[in-house]
Length: 346
Length: 278
Image 1 (tube, each protein chain N blue to C red):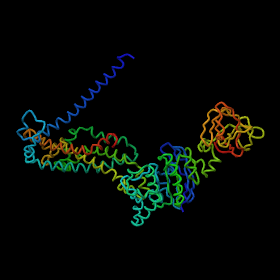
Image 2: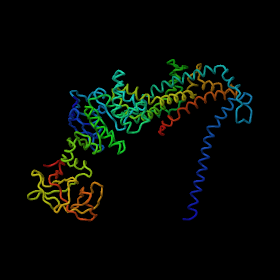
Image 3: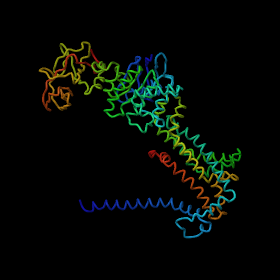
Image 4: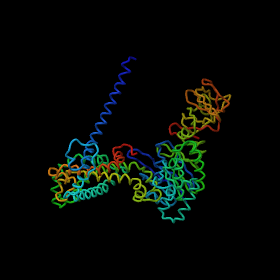
């Protein structure tokens, strides 16, 4: 069992607070993605779990052991680094065997594990090479194989795919997901790439300014953002926001009346995802500014009462800049946010 | 656009090229002419050494060298030089490499001041220190010993050892060490299994550099040793009594190992000054 519990973990570097008392529980064998922009504290949190950074306060538990006072080697973790960190003076075989040799494992067992993980990562033909003779993608495979060979309870990954080109990244993404699911380890995966997060995670922890804003399944994070930040960070293009004012019988948004939260301040924000908007006979009047035909659909950037408003429309509709469209949101996809607290309203 | 506008930059570029070429030629001659003189004279017979003009190619007569190595006390002095330089090398790397590692890996208060002070040790003129040192060495019994002189030479070599190893360790990504920690190493094991193999060539280079610093040093050697003179001190002492060909042969014996060593480790010395380590 390798459930990970993080209790009130905070980290300051001098006067800069990188993490504000974070609480998070990651279930055994869960694939948890820490997602956020650079500087949000996601890598700091990962490094605290790994033991490469000491928290200013708080506790880290792996299984039933409190590990925040232990060095990395005693935590039962393996880590994959952004720049791979493949040892340049050792062959691929010795890289993968490195941790096993530290455990003084018998040669037969070392051979067995190295061969098995090398096959798993499709690098069995590279075992005699040095990292200087490998491509970036191959180095990444070696780094993952090295971590898997340890058969750790927890695998920590720090932006492992961000140095690869787009095509390779997509390929490795699917492969990593499969390999890690089969390995029965708990995985914590740090990325700033929301597509990576959405496609791989069991749960995503969206981080901002040293806090976890929302920790939920990918669909939940996408459909029901807990905070305005999540809606504006996840989704490409992000959510549309329009000001809403209380009116008799509901909320007035750009001249239209919507039913909304009963218990709320007088001025709140209306939010809708661009793909949850369709042309209709009644709706917002939008002035088209930019039209981007993308193949499967057309991205229309428009203005609704002076506010930026994007809609993903069917690729059959190709309006011209300056056109006036009438756009209606799908009613059950409308979300509301409190501009003061930034939190979602229901 | 007038003609002057287009011609002038060309003319400037032309003369700039001349200045550059002349400067390079002067610098090259500045270094090469003394080395050439040294070689020609060391490899000529004693009679040719005093003759003029010089031939471009030496006669490869071993007379001068044979005389030099047969000269009383030369071989002892040579052996002393090797010993002092070896001890200097061990001291400079033994103390300098840990300091370089600490500078590259840890943030500690006073780090910048420490780096500055390391370089500042070179600002003290050795003559100023040599006499008080000689008195102290006589009191402690370190005078006229290999260790005593090596201590002084190690002080001279340490700043370079610290700076070279600092840039060396900084060039080894800290993630490699972190990966080793997460794979079961403690700090010492990670250093031994990952950092040391990668840094070894550079450490050897800075060791060689420390060796050369001691090998070439003359002032402290002349002041602090009497019986156990190093080769430089020995040559300095016998400068006015020895014949010309002996001086040239001695000079060549001193310069050649230093030149070869420095040439062998040049890329690491460039790295010390922040030029890319390639």
